[in-house]
Length: 355
Image (cartoon, rainbow, N blue to C red):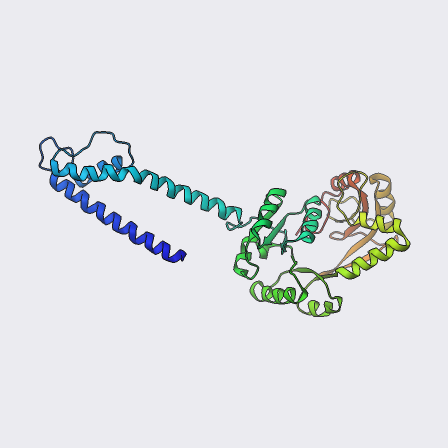
């Protein structure tokens, strides 16, 4: 239907241009030998048509012959609708540009960001935690209501949203899918997630994926498909529920540690990459533990150790373990102490800071 409308508009436009050119040539023919005529060339006739159709009407050029004035009447009458038509079309163009931008069709400039495919209350909770931690997120949604909600509630500098059908993989280039650090696929069921990830692997190659499973027994299948991180909602929920039953204070503390900090009373488990500027690079784990507690009011609880292309998580390693460049320090801290750690370590929390 859109193609038909474009073809019809093009035909009408071409016919209108041909008609105007013929009339202008006829006007020149009728006026060039008339006494006192100011229309003697095609350029004169074109200037007269433009100032008349746009209702400017300078009055410097006009037909003087009776036949020429008949053509002039045509341009005067056409001018009544031409300007409105022109303004209408320009308005449509600007509205169309605004709508495309609103839908994310001009694309994102994000890099090293998180892409979330699929929007619901669960995605919303994840996004809020991510942006509280200073990360940028690109969201793909397929409902107009979700698009409006996301744009109203989040800063476009932190959250980019693309309105698109999920199966339109070509459109995913607009969220800079290949420049993203990780993709969280949040579709309706495990089967849809598996098929979708296999298609993305085929179209984009080397991407890093995170998913949550309804059926924990499918973990091996998803690992084989190339998914990097897999969580089972039921397993995580079961652990928290069990903890709330027999050690509720521990459960509350764990839930608090899983959230990003917003105020000094909030605590969070964070990881910071060790750079050459880090005061504890080449120091022992034991020395770093006591210094971090004393100077930054935070507790060092582990070390993620660089092992060739991967990392090994060391939970409370021996005191003589050496902290090296590109390792990660894992600490429990609060909002106020987090600012001190960022200044001291010369980096922000998370693994996206240097990717």
